[in-house]
Image (tube, one colour):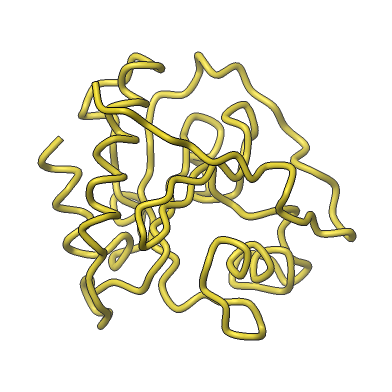
Length: 172
């Protein structure tokens, strides 16, 4: 198994003061899937597209909720340099994919990537490597098979996580 370095940001990312923290916890044994996303054009009001900027976007008015979300809506974030950040505890039910939230882990690639009907760039080689290491880690620690990995596109968002990243899922 490859070495994995997960940087814990759970306590360092600000929460939306107008919303409660995640109202629901779950037994990690109930998780049966991992859903891969891209941040797309999402950024905070100052244009920051790193994990802190995406958190600021999520806790403000956004495409998910006009009142903002309680916190960044993913469990993991993979930065363009390959850094793997834990943004929420795996027992938290986050708001990353509607009806799939209770049973899934959300992984977000920081970036805006080309997919069906959406122009964009490509994820970095470092993100590719980080995703593969994280996927292996999640398969080993949670007992998930490769078939438990999906793109957001499998649940109604055609361009997410982008063509290249979706190909990674097929290569697991």
